[in-house]
Picture 1 (cartoon, rainbow, N blue to C red):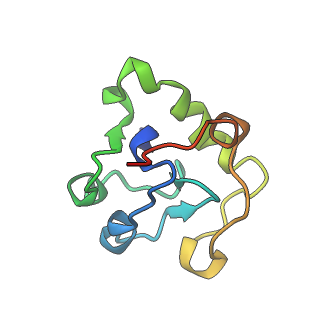
Picture 2 (picture 1 turned 30 degrees about the vertical axis):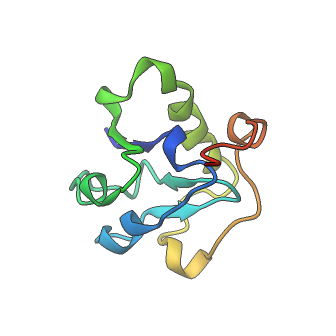
Picture 3 (picture 1 turned 90 degrees about the horizontal axis):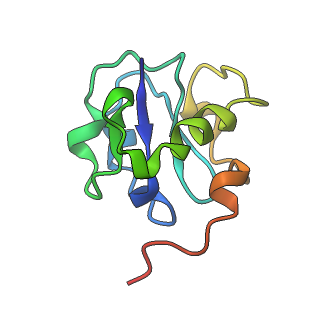
Length: 107
């Protein structure tokens, strides 16, 4: 099991969760953040740190955002397991599901 970052993070990417993650498993895409499913230790530190309430335990992901589970997994298809987000840095892509979304969270 792992945590999933859903729609409220798209185009916001506050990064408070990144600061709280003790294992550096939250990676930055072009429009959203993604939690590496194999690197996450399920500590839950990221969830309360998120000001947009975008982080959900896998089993608690709302049905309306179930596509974010596959998007989270797809983000790492080519990256594999780099062993830490800080060393890798921001990536200039998102999975198709996120990349194809219209602009989000624009107040």
